[in-house]
Figure 1 (cartoon, each protein chain N blue to C red):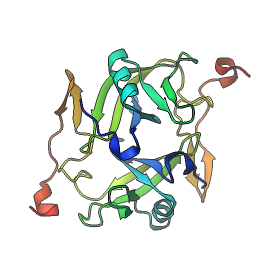
Figure 2 (cartoon, each protein chain N blue to C red; figure 1 turned 135 degrees about the vertical axis):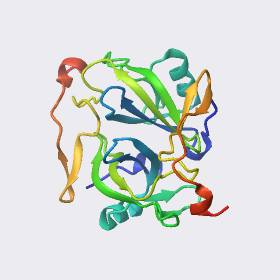
Figure 3 (spheres, helix red, strand yellow; figure 1 turned 180 degrees about the vertical axis):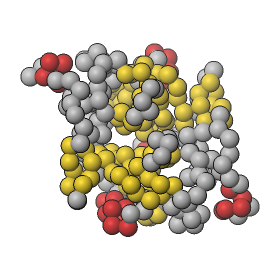
Length: 124
Length: 124
């Protein structure tokens, strides 16, 4: 289960996809420790580039991502992880997917409906 | 159509998804120039980290990726681009998707069937 962490300064991109809808939920990054922890725990664990630490997705919100299938690409420097999302959405802004903005006429437009109230989950 | 290129040393991750099947095809990276070129040309253009240059996907194989929809995430540091793939597959190893290997019993196993012969397209 080797991966190539050299191309991105110790990280690989990890894309999560919903196991039922096939919808792309979020893109995160893993270092080798986060990758090992994801496989061992069965919960998607990223490396937070802004906080410089491991980050099990959902550790504060409870919206964890249960690993169903893991794929890698030809170069073994990216991952697609099919997941069961615990909770209504993965995005801290209240949406099912972090990709709720679409390019329309040269500007980003919010095109999804909120799935939950982030103030209730994360505090106001 | 602003993006945050600061978190990844001038790059954003760009995930391409097939417009009919919804299948995740490949993950690449774009710098600001590649991003602008993608929007202006309507063909997915990456920044090659190994070759340090812009790379319109399919420029040698003809297997270009026609942009159908572009989404960004909450942080505006990643893209999901829905595409029409010209040609049988995006992977230079002959597969429809670059993600043709699955983690099974702690090892990567090829689980997809080849979609074309890469020797015919790229030379032997």
